[in-house]
Length: 344
Ligand code: ATP
Ligand code: MG
Ligand code: FE
Image 1 (cartoon, rainbow, N blue to C red):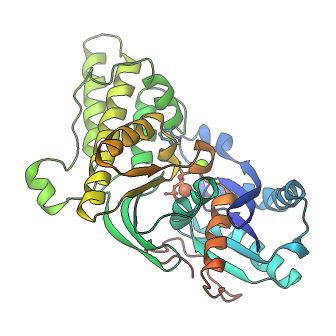
Image 2: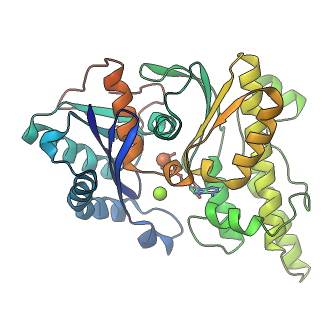
């Protein structure tokens, strides 16, 4: 079946088209530059940008795949979580196209789509798998027995998301928004062992209560204090070393907890998804540590880790193949859609 996916949960308008696990089109329009001067995504600006971009992006994806809407078997759309106004644009568009072309529509979970997208690159996900989901708004460890029907949360951040921590630390280092890719680049020239930043929730007593949870706000504060102390002393801030040491602290904890979960659950596959999965150090460290334990790591290419339409199409394709029923045509956009609800 030919599945079209629509993504508008944040600042990326994405339309992807897949057949099975084959990616045929992945059209993207981003409003990220419009938000950069505010240092974060402005919801009203994002909604308006989606409104302007949705039809042209749809047309581009169809042209790229060389198909028409009549050829599409089902339309998948991000129903949540995300920005309410932004989600509404995608959901309304999906309903419009579905109604006009008489196609079934699947309202899907954006976070599950971040996990599902890997199948486009590496084929069907062996299950059970552990998924490390690290994005701008979320950081979770999940046990995936059957992605079409639900996921079991093992742990999550108790404060900031990993991507949020990257963006905040980038900001205090004077790097542009979104900061993740800039920290990644700066860190290449830095020494990851230069500064010993704290590893959140890894002390023995924290592990007892928060074995698979994360905390990044203490790390962010530690970086801020360190940078302030330098500035107060009138000394230059070694941006590359701070970036590398901060990045190491994040990646160390993420990979250690993800692999501990694999071992505890006897799982041989770790899939990593979400924008922070694009991070070069996270990818390398996960590979390195997993290899020693006989765990296979699957991470899609960086362009599929950040928000896009292909990931929504990939999850839609998996739902159709698994015999999951479509959503009702009056499906809601739910800004707080829980992680455990894969399709509405
Ligand atoms: P969510 O998926 O939780 O709703 P989102 O959709 O805004 O949030 P994504 O697009 O999945 O988030 O990810 C964006 C985040 O990924 C940003 O915080 C960004 O800084 C981070 N990011 C992107 N590339 C990298 C990288 N190379 N290293 C670290 N972080 C990165
Ligand atoms: Mg984005
Ligand atoms: Fe996302």
